[in-house]
Length: 65
Image 1 (spheres, helix red, strand yellow):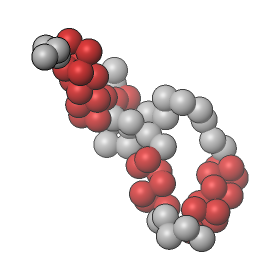
Image 2: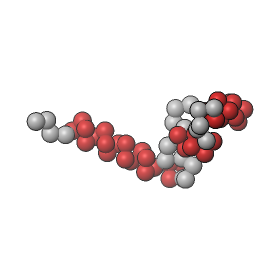
Image 3: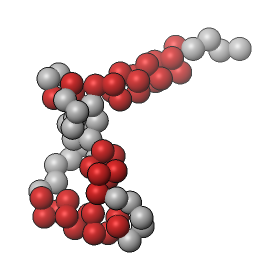
Image 4: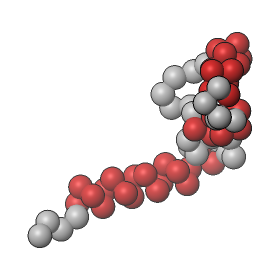
């Protein structure tokens, strides 16, 4: 829980070494994706986790008409 409260967040899916991340940023740069945006896209923090959970729960528990 402490890591989700940090600004940088955590990487919930997989872990990249510094070399792998550098290779990925080189590839992403060709598509116009900047390194800070890629780093943010690969991590999750508390507000993102809370917002996603609320969205999923409201969809699953929503009233069907």
